[in-house]
Length: 355
Image (cartoon, rainbow, N blue to C red; front, side):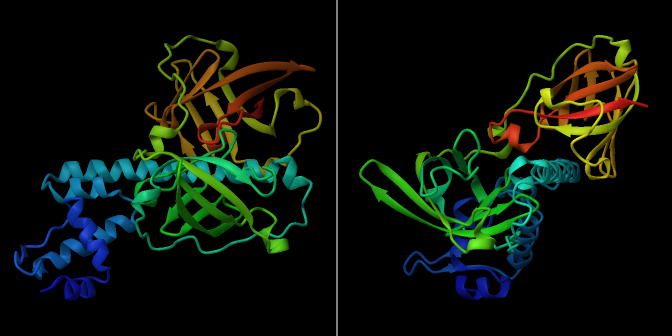
């Protein structure tokens, strides 16, 4: 069947089929050398639909290509295990961002601001020109937005992959921090010194005012970055050193932005609203943490050594210190969320009290 008919049966666009061919995912069985018409077989319908399912599940085209080219069940299972770990990490980061934003000073000062929840689960359409790293060069609100973080950079990852709060599809910039979610239009323009993008950004006051923030970006490079590649990483390959003071179970007491905010008397946040609930240290370098309703205990995910909790799943070494106040031991641990890993911000801190 011709490409148009095949696309209709599979429920995708002709341009998507051409892109699959370019990427080596699904090529026509025959191309007429005189007319250029592309022909597909009925047997390829199942392959095309499988690609769609895998994309919906969050797999990149390179991962899908690996699956399609192997009959080894173990390889496929490893790819699913890897994706499952990435998605679990994404859920962690989403919860982290939610807790941090809920506790941020600007939220406390603007309790009456409306939230915006638009549908950001849009079908992906490629725009190859925007893939890469972009510099934020101007904003009509004098940089009041936290858009881009401290680095004032945005990455457009291949296949619209989410990182931190950001994703995209052709013509649309997608934002979801767990509280606000919105779709902002973008356009690109080639100028003498490079490619520029203008985003009509729906910033935090959009739900109240209906006014967008015009943000201008300049493309720095067209590299096909991955989420893991652009994340800040700490050295987690530290040898185990014993610290008997930290052994035992600790329960959450507070969440603070800076260590100097620590108070043994009055916590800043209600305990019920805190995401990181408990942590227990064992003498062999093992530790168990309770995040929300999920327990992390495997050494492959998290260990500790004197002065640090080593979160292997996101390559962060979170320093800790112990303070004794009025006979009570308090543990202050760095909390390196997506703001730290992708936004370039300083770490926040969780405070625990010994059980």
